[in-house]
Image 1 (cartoon, rainbow, N blue to C red):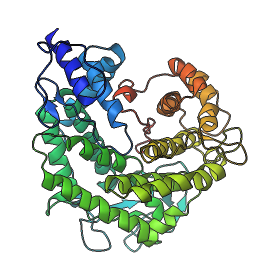
Image 2 (spheres, rainbow, N blue to C red):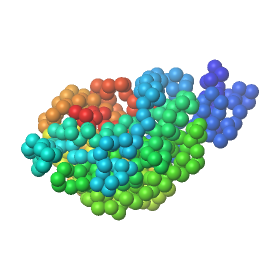
Image 3 (cartoon, rainbow, N blue to C red):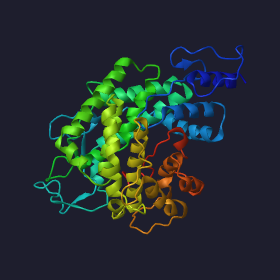
Image 4 (cartoon, rainbow, N blue to C red):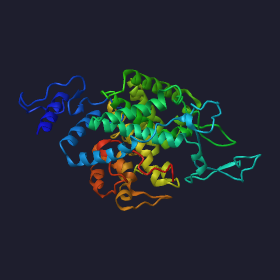
Length: 431
């Protein structure tokens, strides 16, 4: 009962509900963003996630609401593992990038394969040829890509775990992981992807490699916004350092050859480029830029990428058509959430053809609910559509809302209620 009264009082202070408690029952006004027992009560200034929704979910979990509590328990199961892993750094790889600086991110194109047996004179087995959807295991010998995935995911889960529980261990571990990857002089990554997805004997790096940060860097942006609400051990200097890194990386994205090449892509690569740039812009206080990116996404991304019936031709023509159709919508639905922060409604944008985000999501419903998918797919995972259906349902899509109970839950449980934005649920980076 005391906890419930404290929650109601904190909700009132946060402006979420009007308190009905008497003055004797009400908790004292918090200092800053924290109150005893509950911890942070300020909605974080996140770029993709809705900070007010996070705060409502926090209080729902505290009072025992079933969906929130179940999702939080699933999150904490994973976050507890994150307490014991890492930290990760680009400087631990054995290979040296063409720059000679291990602080530069390095990776190889995953779907390119040698055509001959490696020899002393030709150690890579060049020339390389592309095999779409077939991942060459040699790419995993360079650890930056895998470590990036582990680090960014852990940072996000740990920050959320701290926000929901107030347990300082989660915040402190997230801070360690952040400083190691982004801030500490000995281990930090330089804010560029000049050598991402290179092809041996062909090119050192490509704009297409930027996709390796896809949505996960925007989760880091949101994680630091969450920690900035008062996480123990996370300082203003830390936050300023991260903002500086984001600013430099955004500048690289918008001015480098690799970045400008990726911006021109007319498939999921272009969608993720815009989503990442918009998140970084909003996270560094460049609201006008974030708004322009979101506004342009209607005619520049939705209109050319989605047909009137919701079919995505650039994605459905791939050997992994189910994965990529969902993957592109991870980017576009997250971009729609960023747009909401800056007054742009991408969910209700309709292209001249009649195409829309809602139609693209609804096109996936037979595959998500019944496994009915008529296009090439090397590894069909029905649950891949769960998050984009959640996002569409939140935005008002009645068909998506009706379909949700029929979609299998991803391994580890449905985390959407506690991190309400789409993720790539069928991770193919190791398949």
